[in-house]
Each structure stands twice: as C-alpha cells, then as structure tokens.
Amino acid sequence: MAIREVLKMGDPRLLEPARPVADFASIELAQLVVDMHDTMRALDGAGLAAPQIGVGLQVVIFEVNANPRYPDAENVPYTVLINPRLTPLSDALEAGWEGCLSVPGMRGLVPRHTDLRYQGFDAAGQPIDRSVSGFHARVVQHEVDHLHGILYPMRILDLRDFGFTETLFPGQNLQDD
Image 1 (tube, rainbow, N blue to C red):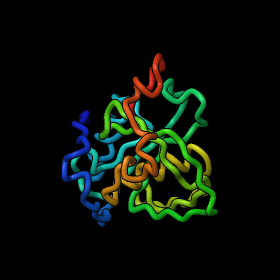
Image 2 (cartoon, rainbow, N blue to C red):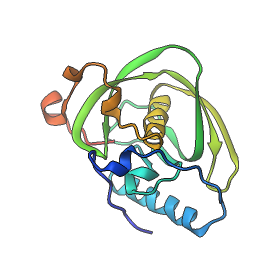
Image 3 (spheres, one colour):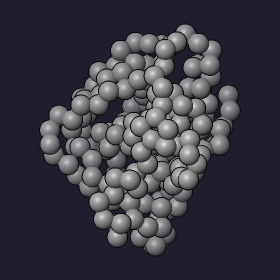
Image 4 (cartoon, one colour):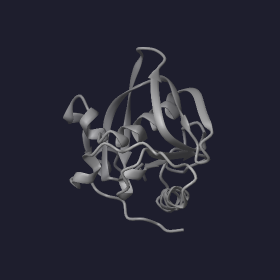
C-alpha cells in the first residue's frame, strides 16, 4: 500500500495513450489498484486514472460517497474499471465545472454526455456493464479521458470558463478532483 505522486499537467506521460490490461491475475495489477485507491482516498478525490500516477495502463477508479467536496453530488459506487468502453446513450450534453488532481488549483467548465453506458472489467476480470447519468457519467468520462491522453482543459470550449478555483469561487472550499 502506497500513496503515489500524482503527475501534473505538462508531464508528457499524461498525454500518452494507455495500454489495455492483459493479465488480470498479476500481482502488479493488484498492487496498482491498491495504490490508486490509497492515493485517491488520501487526496479526497472522486477518481483517479493509472496514467496520473505514471502507469500507462487502462485502469481507472472512482467513488463519491458523502464527499464534503461534492455535497450536492449523488453517490457513485466505488468502482475499479479496466479496459473501459464508453457509449453515449443520447446526444445530450451538459456543461459542468471540473477540477483534476493533475491540474491543481484550477477549474473549468466542461461539456459531457449526460447519459452513458460504460463497459469493461473489474480488478478480478469480471465484466462490468452499467448505464449511468448525471455526475456519475461525468466522473467516468473525466477519468477515461486520462486513458486517451486527454486532460479536461482540452475539452473546455471557451477559455474564459477556466481559471483558478479561489478566483472563480471565492470563499468556497473546493479542491481538485
């Protein structure tokens, strides 16, 4: 178990596409998932992708459960999602404020699909197939973007909707995702 350093925007490893996981029984995968969990929890994150800690594999984790940083967000169950595939269930998009542990201290308004199906595997190689909406869908899209070398600022349509959290939301105790 270890809390790993999170790479920051500008590190070229964050821009590289991640490789699919081939061996679900490996000790390395099990340790990666534990380290990601410990890192996400230590930083009060809503999610974390393996490339954010310098591991180029298609592994993301996410969870929101009474997180003080997201008081209005619905609960999102703890999920380990490996080799994910996303399918939008409608053309509807909604803009929402996002932050990221790899882009500390900043927020941006990002359009995301409101309804989404995600498929992949859990840490044991068992299939996952869920249809979700709202904040759950946003979190999944944000984390899976990391697997394709995409950071949320790349999705912002108008850079006037991007800035330092303390300036955009004075007096609010918002941290990075």
